[in-house]
Length: 265
Image (cartoon, rainbow, N blue to C red; front, side, top):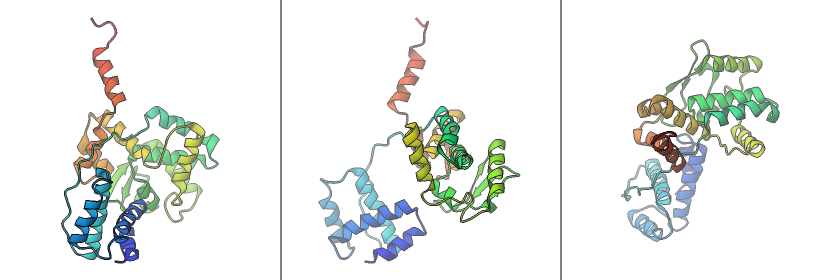
């Protein structure tokens, strides 16, 4: 058992947050057992039946599968437990525009923050994809970005509006490239979101702009799941379907539009 080597292996394959989650999952196992074998796995999972939710089991299954891949040894695991999917939180167009409009009062480098919010909410980029982005992959003239360092290890192209292309070009002209295209640190996006939440009382996190794009895309495209999957870089359409789940508030609003029309008898 070498969790340090396992962590290093994960670092080059998954996000930082996922790496920590998977390492902690396996750390819990190794606190009780010195080695991974079928008997120990069965015993460990049996001890969690009354304690873990379906989501907790699934997290361990994912971590264990990566550990098996790391050690090149396979063991039997139960099927993933069915977990009821919940609609992802998102911001509507008005909320996103409000945040953009308020940036000058919140940030010294407000033009950069405005540009990043627009880019994330129009492209559906993962935060890590933005952090890993290099300027050589940004084509201002053709108004597109080719993402190379993606979660699925497959490149994909995202498109830019004319206005956003001009804003990005202006930022690039104002400062030289450092570690990445927008000179962001690991904690930059977290800081921006924390500041927005504190000052505007809008619950934001680096991923919510991706969820917002997904919700907006489905609404404006007539529920085009295939197109959204390509936009988000999903290799499995089932992953994309979670964005089509409607909240109770949305279903009630739809019901009211359909059956509570004024003047209808």
